[in-house]
Length: 154
Ligand SMILES: [Zn+2]
Ligand SMILES: [Zn+2]
Image 1 (cartoon, rainbow, N blue to C red):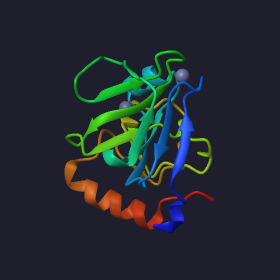
Image 2: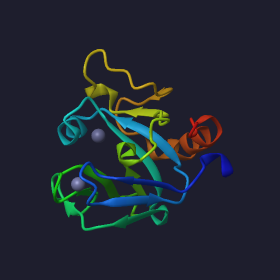
Image 3: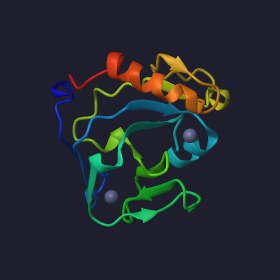
Image 4: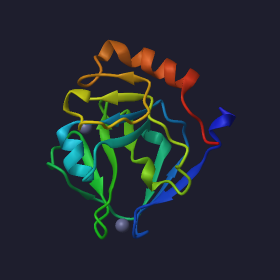
């Protein structure tokens, strides 16, 4: 779809790890769970979920977070930015932090997850809200909604 204006390039804070996105995201989400609060040091994490084949990475990453095999939380070994998470939906998808993108200022999350743990007063701009992770049967509808109504690069 041409209105996604792919590819996108990006990098961690220090520039040691570079990323390139070549496939459109299937959904953008803000996760308000306690783990994402700790991982980001902020109120929630932002994710662009895209096909795993749509992300290429230049430079070594290291695994952080809880070091669980699934999902794999990849960080920059130098500046310790949280970069992306692999192993989503059996490895078919990767969650990329849009803060890496050189031009990510257009990103608006479509769905909030784990609002049951969100901090008081925090709003992400998402239009649909889940108290925990969405049930699997909602995924297709979420992706349809995002393809139809998701905010595109300006
Ligand atoms: Zn870095
Ligand atoms: Zn989370």
